[in-house]
Length: 168
Picture 1 (tube, one colour):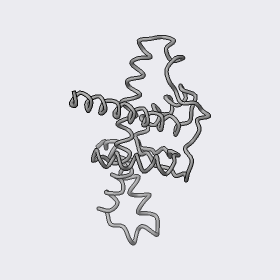
Picture 2 (cartoon, rainbow, N blue to C red):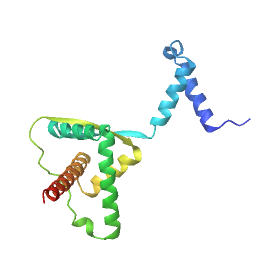
Picture 3 (tube, rainbow, N blue to C red):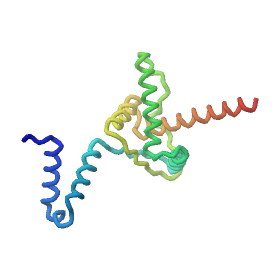
Picture 4 (cartoon, rainbow, N blue to C red):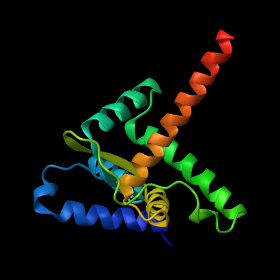
């Protein structure tokens, strides 16, 4: 009888996990199954450490909370839309990448204390973000923060525009 690759992988994981003396006395088969399931699903995930000011981190957390999203989900939503938009524009217009607004590698950082935010994402998403930053010749953190600021600026302008229309 031929076993599926998933069964073979589970058996290998279980054998290695349970054969460890420290684990064998503490771990039951159900716990081993749960550990395998988690490790298998997390294999295609990664994280990017985004360096930012404490004020930028506060704004990100606050805006994510307003949208009832996890911080990574909030940031990824904005980043993936920005990347998709720019990829469509660049695909239609050769040479346009030289003219679009991009963050400078030497962007002046806001004064004050620094911190970092952990952006959890799929490996594919992290590669897209890395390519986006490389295409703009900036750091990953610089690209992420530039995309967030641009999104915030657009949202603010739309809000102001709607506010002016209701006043008129």
